[in-house]
View 1 (cartoon, rainbow, N blue to C red):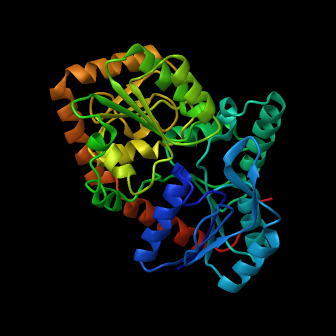
View 2 (view 1 turned 180 degrees about the vertical axis):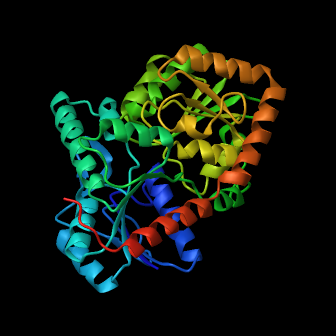
Length: 384
């Protein structure tokens, strides 16, 4: 099958969507499919990846916005002749893919990865906040409503979209987990001794590895670090809050916090392995791919009870949950884990079993192929 994927973000950008789209492309290719990706994300030349000219988003500098991508996308699709177009983001790049596919009468599968409405905490300007959230949210719903099929990473998100839709969707919304390439991740775990490199031998290590934005809960993590100065907290990532995070650490003299900034992909598995606990205190994640990666590398996964995290992280079974935004609740969870080695061993064992059964990108790729085949066999349909 010939598949064209459109995504604003792609490797080497380090976010869940970029990681997933990259892993999905490789998994589909291993299955014998011909895949191209059209993106605004800058990076090295890669076979099958078309990187369109882009500008930095002013209030979200990690991301790029494609400049008039439609004509380029149309020419690429017309030449490639895909069986199906898969939209991973709904904005400039996704819209170019959507309009081109419609013109060429190619079935469209959409994937809802980002809860734009709840990202408002990450946009500082009130004016930009209102414009970005309100317009972006309504526009993305409109794009996804017009796709021939729509996937979401969790049942929680599926229910949320049904409740938020301006009008009922004409197609079923399918749940397909956005999984990483666990095998590739584990193959890199032992390349570095990150505990020795960071001077963390003998410490209880708690790691935050994500974009530095408010909706990821970085300040919940930092507040917890203030409450637990006998633990070692590690922060890896970049984003709009980086300077504010550095200032927070300096102002409160948090000597128990190591700020790493950008973490190279080659070192990420070793850092996860070196961590006793990996925390995602997010307010709006639709899934939480970093927690799947942490579970695969042997860390205890701790997540907030918001969004899609609760789909796979079961409190006291394969990880721990706490109330989103509640640093005290997170602190209590960490203190329990630090004092209960038997519980940690149980959580790690159950997480490893969970990953073996459900955590493969191949599972996600097979589910996507089934959906591709369904929309192709159904023939092209236009939803107004």
